[in-house]
Length: 417
Ligand code: AMP
Ligand code: GLY
Image 1 (cartoon, rainbow, N blue to C red):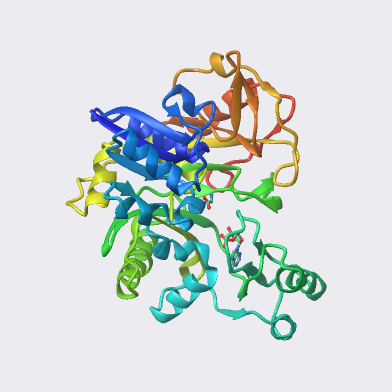
Image 2 (image 1 turned 45 degrees about the vertical axis):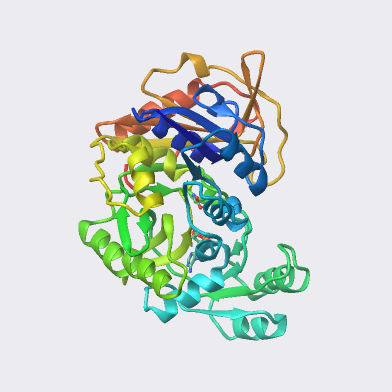
């Protein structure tokens, strides 16, 4: 029986642990650092996701057969490179390949060079030059900080005054650190998340999902890490999917090989179905959160085999998906994505129907009780014959969970219900 280490401690990692838990080959799962919910299915170890040496030492000492990396910060810290150098098996991209997420400018230059459909753009380091460019363009305009900013580095000003303020924050006051700004054309259309297992030139698509980035109902309020998701996504046609695979995901994988930084792991295409067809909004170098929590429950195949085939560069087994639909609601701390208080008791988790999956995003536990400990706290997922049924089940479960400091969006799935 295999021993697996999962790096990370959110809902995405809970869903990865849950999928590994279903593998008949996996005997023991560790999660670093994990969280209270993950602790019900794996042994949590108190090592930070960016403590590369600590993680490596743990893997060696405990005879870990395979390590799976959740968060981008661990990848950007070079955890995969360090594990490989030490002869350890690990699923995830190298630090160089992770640049596709950690630098928006790198991703945009790559797409421009290899003709991959995306919004027109220009990159600036200089405040005055950026301001001049924006002044002569149209609004709204999309301003993206070049580096990692935990989903908060994208601002879409409607007016020149707002744009000026944002550029000041990003380029003069270094709000996210010293860095460049990508100024992008504003695109319209529904977004969808296309995650693929990628091993160099080989691309194996996962079933589609859709996230809800804005904090409040009606897609209002600030951008968040994601407030809910569902799978599959009926508004994306077979033709859109084929185009996204052949004109976007496969060419990008080939481009990464050609650039000398082949990608191995999950490549996440954040795509928009524009009137001109699917275009890239962003790439991530890892599973999406909360998308993973609705996608992996639909995976029929053994995920240990999939991870192994990518990590070892061996033949990929056929990847099968369940017919059932899934939909999940994020319950977040009041105040998120801004500041929020922690430590509120969560009640009712033990009284939910058996087919409801609760993935913990930010919880702690004490004396058998769960408490809030993060911005996003729970992802409550229902499944059923169709999205409406999945929605109704998940929402009923969310309503049965008691906690005075949590809020959620009731309109997850509004585009398709
Ligand atoms: P990103 O972090 O790049 O995914 O951007 C965050 C969110 O901003 C996306 O999910 C979109 O809703 C929005 N966004 C980003 N780029 C564009 C664009 N070029 N046009 C319209 N909306 C965008
Ligand atoms: N849900 C969006 C992301 O994982 O980046």
